[in-house]
Length: 123
Image 1 (cartoon, helix red, strand yellow):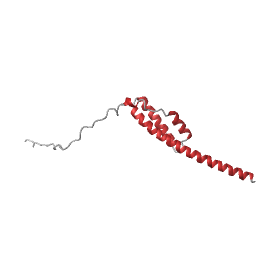
Image 2 (cartoon, one colour):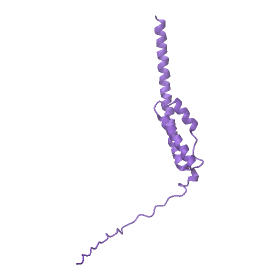
Image 3 (cartoon, rainbow, N blue to C red):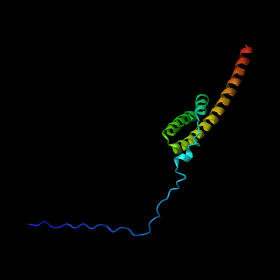
Image 4 (spheres, rainbow, N blue to C red):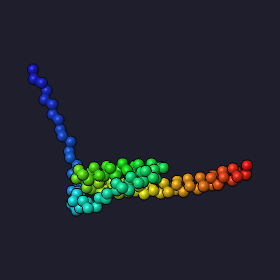
């Protein structure tokens, strides 16, 4: 007894309009064009992390700086460049937040110190 033959038909392919092939600008993807653009933010990130880390932006900027340094050493200059830009934004935000917090801290303790001194002299 013979088994029945099974016939499978392939679906028709869509022959509609096709997108043109994607072309990448080689100048934008060239890693060597980013070699000199990667900034070294180590000292800035340490200062911000120690002095101005009230909101955590300094710590994030410090970590991103270290990631950028590792990418630079590995030869991924494009990633390191864009990572250093993001780290710089976080570090600047940390300086702004830290400056505001230090000003509030100094004003608060200056007024509290004056009030405490006045209350001690009044006794």
